[in-house]
Image (cartoon, rainbow, N blue to C red; front, side):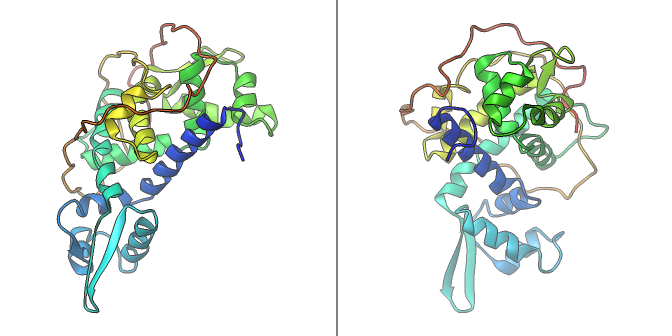
Length: 280
């Protein structure tokens, strides 16, 4: 049952992307996926690659990734078990460099150089705020929306004032702009710049080739071009495995459902994000 006032296909699309983000955002999940980028590994071999995990932490993480369909456990013999990516897990990897590209352009400048894995993890934190995906979808489609109207779309069964805590968080994160209390909300340049990431996540979660992201009825629209902005992060973390190169497929677009929103307005200039870009 839909929990928003969006069309059913839009609601399903957002739910799939939210679920995909929930698979990879938990701490260490991306690092484990990257550690498995090569040939399948025994448990002890994988544990050596993610040695910062304490005893007992790796097994439940692997179990969760197996349950999510991103990692597969192969029992060759009773004493020979290996772990490796599923096809779905392998198909997800090219999205990670896209997240790094977005972070390098839009997030605050750090006091020290940041590893790609830190950029990914901190960016995922922003994307998994409560109601963030739905709010970003609506603002991308409608361009500019009042808080009251946004509440009727995003959380129709709740008191409309409940929209303001997640909205204030997205404004603080630098993904949404407003000119002040009582004024409408719109995507910042950084929020609009998430189009390739969210469109590709949508294609992946629907089981479609990643290059179909350009055909997404909302996030396939041209992005506002903004000046590159360095970014900031939290404390230092262990060095990651190398990111895989992005890859594309040759399949033709196959988006079949109708436009996710039938009420999109004409384009208008985006307000600039505050100097320094989204914060962590």
